[in-house]
Image 1 (cartoon, one colour):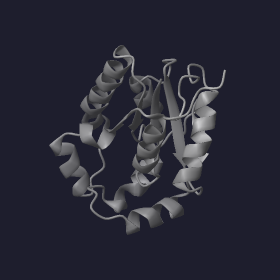
Image 2: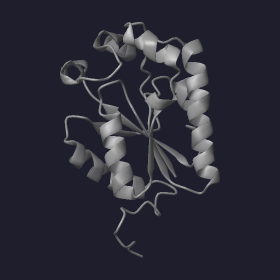
Image 3: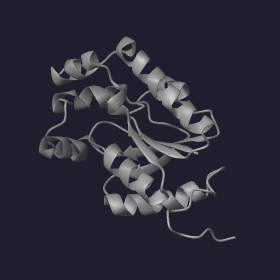
Length: 177
């Protein structure tokens, strides 16, 4: 199973994704690492990416998803995946890909971004992300007001109930038959 933790910048995708991967004993990839230098510079300047900017980025992430699946490995990705068509590229209709939508109010996320340092994303772009966001219909929806630990616990239970989720047992725990 591939898990894509999605949402706008500042929703906690990387934090939750890393923690979830650690608990599951599987790999983690942050979609930010798939951006071209030009995309990163554009966002650093406060310019929103367009679909042409995102196309090679999404294709690279999809290639990584396929590689993990072919290798028979579970993996967690953190990726904004804001539009339905982006999720289609990543594999929304692929039974092995589960989307987790970290949902939060603009005010809550804005506060988080204001206190976050060392990231290339310009907080002034947050509204453009909400404008772009097409909330998913077929995702596990999680309220970001919970702590990251509580979110990961909820996800472990919800993922176990997904088709193909049975093998996703937290690392170090025996599966109950």
